[in-house]
Amino acid sequence: MKRVFLYLILMTVLASCNNNWSNLIPKSAYDAPFPKDNKDASQLLGDKLYIKRGKDTTILTITNIGKRNLIVDKNGDTIFYGSVSRFRGLYYFSQQLNDTSYLIYTVRKSGNYLYGLNAPWYEGVLIDHSVKRGEYKGLVKSISKDGNTIRLHPDKKEMKKLYAMIMDSLPPDTLLMAPEIKNLIVKTDTSSITKELDPEDFEMFSKVYPNPATDELNVQLQQKMTVGYTLYDITGKAITNGELHDSINQVNIGALKSGVYVLTLAKANGKGEESVKVIKR
Image 1 (cartoon, rainbow, N blue to C red):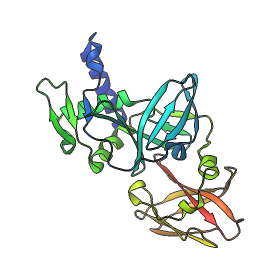
Image 2 (cartoon, rainbow, N blue to C red):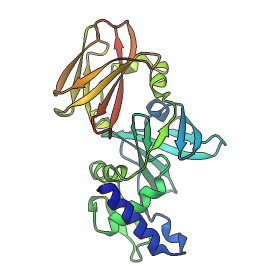
Image 3 (tube, one colour):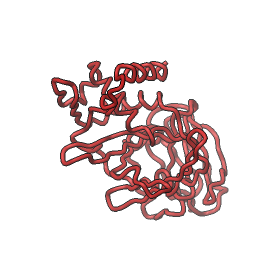
Image 4 (spheres, rainbow, N blue to C red):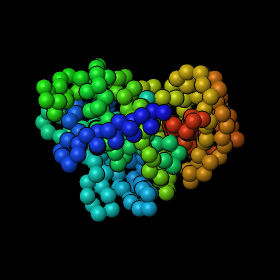
């Protein structure tokens, strides 16, 4: 129902614009980037994404440059340059527009589907409409009298509610290849794996310990829920899978060879997937 509702909103906006296409430019911008540290997007999504959109296939290359991520297409054109943060299962892309404003949009990965990477305009139009309807007041800093300038201030919890709604309305791109599992492993610095997880980065994971582990891996969730898990080896091959049902769960890894693995959780409704790196001693 949400997807249909948001689609109708977008169609209403398009119809109201007639031939004045300048009205289709999003009016909202944030006064600061998303308030979480920048992540290496190539570690989160992979160095290269092979994406199918309709009948077309495109290749995107992701490079981390200091505190910024650069995404370019196969022609070398820049798709995104800015910071990428993770909060409650969504990736927040913050790109500076000028000295005082930022574009922020979200991306979600679920299995071989990617939502939002090509939709900053779509997300911006829906944000404009929601704000003008008086929703998400915790984000609004100011609105000009003519409604053509909407200044927002990033609030993590309020943005999570807004962008989760928007994500439900987006059609996905299909990932033809899934190199992110191999990239997570190949680029691993094992000294960084054992640091404690930040629960704010995840919607499902709370803690994974001990890491490194010998026999049992304890997987603590944010709350009691049922999620599927898959453990991948260094080649990206699924080694074992099952379900977790409790707040604290045990995954037996005693029979595995020593090395680096990726533990992935997935919601039953297909609307969320998270991965962490683990070491078997």
